[in-house]
Image 1 (tube, rainbow, N blue to C red):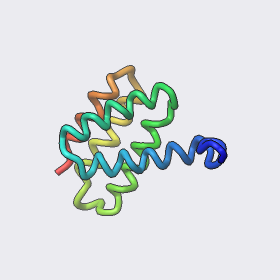
Image 2 (cartoon, rainbow, N blue to C red; image 1 turned 60 degrees about the vertical axis):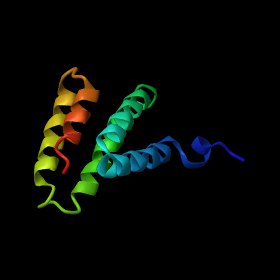
Image 3 (cartoon, one colour; image 1 turned 30 degrees about the vertical axis):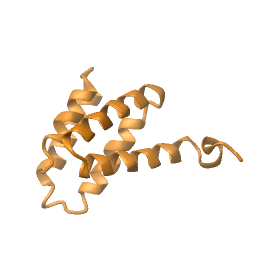
Image 4 (cartoon, rainbow, N blue to C red; image 1 turned 90 degrees about the vertical axis):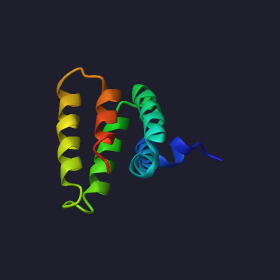
Length: 102
């Protein structure tokens, strides 16, 4: 059997992992979110676009109910812009985004 990366490509693997992370982020407890953020940051070191895949997927998931999720989307975009603009602690930014979820 071919390795997953060869069969699906690195981008497809990142999308699948991002989908798992998004599900945990939206439905998990605070402790599960914190652990997921740690894993996400570790993966981002190996695969630099991991956080970007996660955030764009999270935006798409939250955009299904834009009126209900307006405040979270607004904060997500602001924090993502800060992460890309400055050398900020990404883990803390992601944990701050989690605090805005209901």
